[in-house]
Image 1 (cartoon, chains in turn brown, cyan):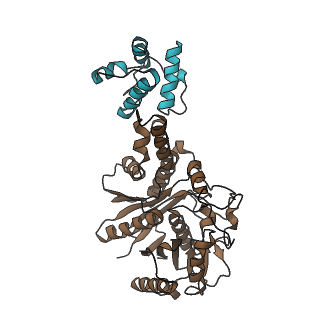
Image 2 (cartoon, rainbow over the protein chains, first blue to last red):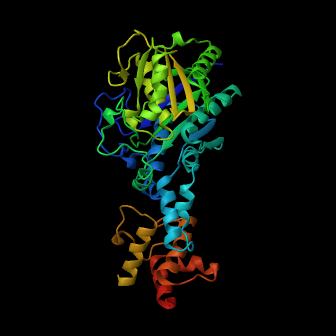
Length: 352
Length: 84
């Protein structure tokens, strides 16, 4: 049974919201890459907005536009993936616990701090009482949502809203700076490829997709394959696994026209992408996306947003492509992401 | 508007995150719940904590809540009578 992507919207550190194309004029960041936010007054009234933190606002607005774009008769499930959830409200709540000696805690920040607030708010806004689940599986949170959505489609549901959402706060950024997770500032997001240093750029964003059993006028692509693997014994078993999974989707490595890698600028992580790029996929076009959005647990969702645009327009902009172009048409795109040789994920989108 | 009423309005705006509102926008005699500011049950909990933290007043009888939180003015009156 074919699975289609009938809506795809993203808020990110670049001008992507409501943009039918991948922006080519990239915004440069030397520190944290924070999302470019729309005017939320168009989406929420002041009473609704007063309890919404930044992530809830940009997640809900992205979901609203995705639902509108897909123009589906119904939403049969809402599945959200987030590594760290509503971080700002979690910090507020924990700080209040400390300030007030764990007494007299206000309810709002606690209610809004849970990971599943994001999916809950969308359900309330759309009066959707259907299946509603949140995956908080670190760097495979979004991919786990996709897997779940495909299974639900196979069980007979028609339209599943799937999202990947994470935010970065200054407090969290400063804490993680102590363990050298970030690039030493100042470091431009435009320089992450092959920079040869450790650490990566902190990013954030929300990307929502309407996963559907039916092809419609708004269809971007077919979701041909989604697969995950926690860890591989060696690089050979990684190639074998990819070949095996592609075979189950009736594809071979040669059918892939473009591989979008999750290069994030950390030499320790990027080495795994280089290996695959120079061996199994040496005859394909190569691209990357984290110079657009930065690194965060659900950044693969931004990569998938980018892949929807590439498939739809049969073209990838120059600042996405690495090296020479080898293929004239882009029919099949493989998105490959991993975190320091763990949580490998493979998503294939096909033109349809 | 006396200083307590003004302070209470500022605290309500701050605690309930009523962005874009100033103390002058809130009529102290208008209902806080349902009509008027349109507050709900979660806000009621926030207001109970505001009384406790800001004025040292612990609401012993929940049945009194409806009367105390009817408007800013009824809250201010309750504070005047019970502030420790």
